[in-house]
Length: 377
Image (cartoon, rainbow, N blue to C red; front, side, top):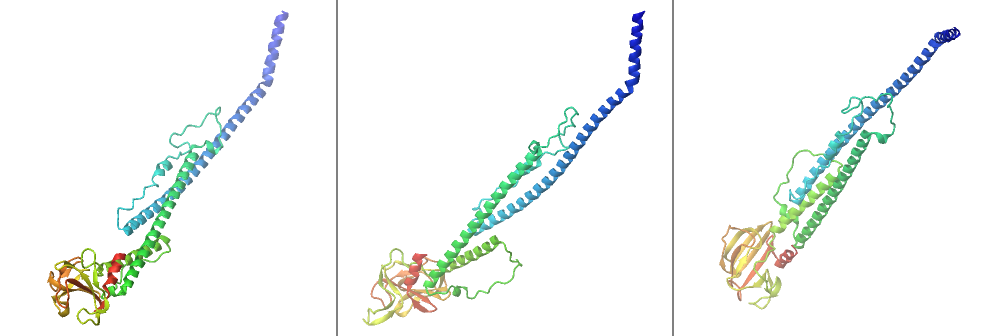
């Protein structure tokens, strides 16, 4: 009976304790669960905010990289255009190799930058509260690593393009300087003949007109214009030099029997002016035109004997005298090296030789002027 009473008393006490403290325990349990849930939700919200911020940063980076790629593409196109101009200056369009396409290589890399955020390709669902771990280190972001890699590649490409531009400038400067020196040298050689290069431009009307091309402050463009002027001047002087009677009228070594100027006349034995130079040669040896021109005379001409006269234009003329035969006719156009006649001893001559004259505006000048310039050319 006593045991039953004790059991009843214990049960009554437990029931009383449960009834008294039940609400307090339940309230405390609910409060703990709510606090834990709010904490997880706050951490999830912070993570989402960070991911959205990262997505905005990646969009800004992509825009910046795309702009740099466009700028590099424009620079490359400009360098390729310059390379074509340099090849044209050299006179060999295929001589200058085309520039490689260094800008295209990082495009795939740029496109491969990871897109962070829950909606990106391959995005993973948010982790469960038990494994949720926020990362704040920059090194832990693959997207940031890819961005840095692309920007590094772009910096390398910019450096390469800078090097190409510098190399092109050096090459252009070298072409301009070389052409300028060549023009100066040719101008000096023409001046040694007592000729003004301007005489070869007579009768040519200057060309006027053309599209308007405003001058710019581009250093490369200014250097290109100067190089083109130097090359044009060199080409003009080369054409002038090619038109000068600077070739030898006889093949092989030339032996002079009489030079230009005052000498003892072989017939009168008194001093007289010798208007050309006499070259020893065998009868029948070919006499050749020393420059291109038109034959104005191929006939017997007093003391000259059989003589050929060739007009080279611009006041220049050559004569080939004492010939034994003619190989050209008046009005015929001859090229340098064309046989105009055969060496002989006709006219006022004491033996077989070629009397060769050069005249400027009708006045005889020493032919050796031209032969010396020929050696220099």
